Amino acid sequence: MPVLSLPQLQRALGKTPPRGAFYLAGSEAILKDEALAALLDRALDPGLRDFNLDYLSASNLEPDELAAACSTLPMMADVRVVVVRDIESWKRKSKGKQPAVRYLEKPAPETVLIFVQGNDDDPDADLAAHCTVIDCKALLGDALDAWLEDRLQGAGITLAPEALEHLLRATGGDLGTLTAEVAKLSSLQVTGPIDRETVGSLVGIRFGETVEDWRDAVLRDDTARAISLVPQVLALSGVSGVRLVTLLGTSLLVLRWGRCTAEAKKIRDRALAEQVKSFAFRIRPPVGSYPPFAALVGEVVGRWSLPRLRTAIAATLAADAALKNTTISDEGGIVTDLVLMLATSRARKAA
Image (cartoon, rainbow, N blue to C red; front, side):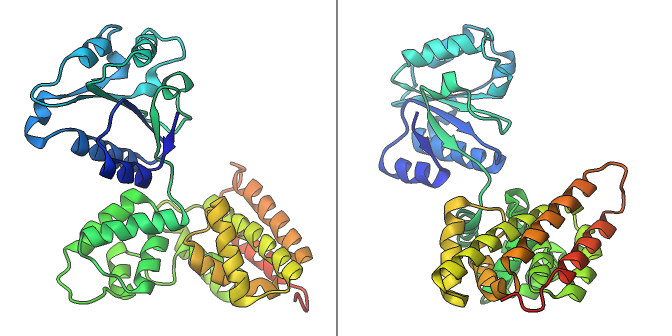
């Protein structure tokens, strides 16, 4: 059961056309669509696609229907493709799944079979054992940056560095939102790099007023700014108090690792930022774009002693629990109290 990311699949398809069976799984529907499009484009001639492509739904598939579709010979082509969607509807011993497993044990060489799982559950082990699994999980860090850069280049768009960072922050890295914003940007008649103000006006969030800007203000001990941003970021679409404290808590955990590393290796600033960036690329924490966050850790690590970090992490956990208590509705007040608590936890000399 080889497992490939979308970029790995695209590189493989550049060398050889697809053969056998593929299983598209993961939480990102856009990546599944892109993986499916890449497979179809490489496997089938556009002029003959209608004759050699079948779409089936697992939820209403008859027991013998899949084998019949896969055993049909291609018309004026080397292969035909059968796409089966909604395979999450197949339970472990369902009548639809068992014929699929039997077919995979002796697949037709002239058929490319593609399973598409609609939810983000783990791949079905019985099916995946015979397939190349394409992991379409949520993108973070450099993978998200590369995905966006590829879409911007494809649309002929150049962004100033601050504009690019603001676009990622303002959208929260959501691929659907990013796709829509890239489409908006492509309609602009501009020469040269697009600036941060233009991006902010398009996405509806001004530069410096994203959830990550709020997190940055907290870590910099800019308490007044952090408090002033609370109602603004909570008013943004898709933002909740739980999301804010989750981002802050994850960031504090990475900052704690940075503090331990700084003390152990006697490093700060840029040298520490490089260590934090490498660490983030390894463990993939959801803290936003890694290079600027790593630079932030290098900047603020002296403010956060290990005892202060322990107190802050405990306070963030308590705020998370309070926010998840359905009897409490003032999430703005809880987040503001957390900011104040973290501010007062600062030692007279943390470094």
